[in-house]
Image 1 (spheres, rainbow, N blue to C red):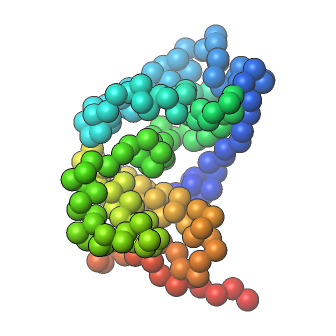
Image 2: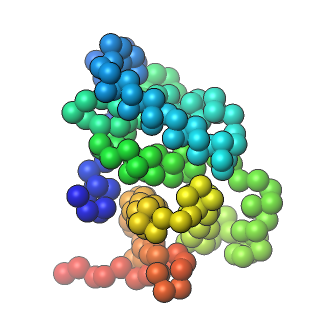
Length: 202
């Protein structure tokens, strides 16, 4: 399956505490041997990434990402814990590497807080008005997500390319960017993210 197809195949939907979906994804008992093994491998990859790059308290990650797992015939998934008993399951597919990449970018976007040093580097690059520069801040965060990923695994161009595509896809699906006449793009020759004009549709 092509990367773009895999990106589009990721499904998310909301459910409530004590619903059938809650029992299925959060409580998920009586795992098969395959489900147990793949869930453990998935969790180990996430913890290994955190230990090698972010080094934050894993409980902070789990405060929002309530559950990581694998279910036969559905693949890898995570459950995001919103407030007041609201949850969202993100179905990540059967490829553990793809699922892992998508999840890491989401963890970075929702959990990880930049250090003052990292913020200062962005300010130097884009100026102190970065909070008012919507395109600038999106480029900065895209570069940040990619740089953290490359700290973990920088010698695999295929996986780096997959992460770049997912970062671009995630940004361009943001409802703010959807309303703009530009979109986020990664220029391979220049090796950087930029905003380009959207093609006009008839």
